[in-house]
Length: 183
Image (cartoon, rainbow, N blue to C red; front, top):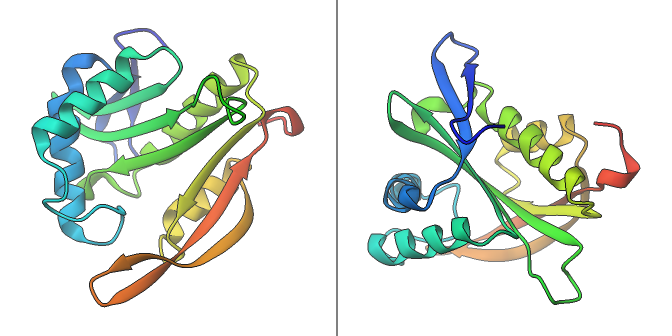
């Protein structure tokens, strides 16, 4: 993938671009996360728990760090999706990356998640990573289907892992092992 990205077509015919993240994307990504956070279903952080300036700074620092992968999906100049693989260098876990995806409401079920995961898998394979792991809510069936179609396997379930108001939510643990599959 070049710095300017790859042109893509969504399932419904809309055009979008997948590209590497830039430090200047911090504010736009923080807005995307804030918008998705207000839905109260997909992210483990709650609205108002992180200030947008703080989150924008953190995102820009992640993008600057060579060990992480940040992919951005954009359409007509708007950020519509993000994929992050974070890697802890210098630790016993440096052989693995932790994947997270956020996609704007109007762009879900358009194939963006599948394209971003495929890009992340290429990146992980090129770096010789042994494992890419993630956590997903059990009711996020669309995301689970994408992950399974891309070769991720379920590793377990953490019961009552996250609190959402007065209820507790489980987390499905999934992983992909680049050296064990040909995807």
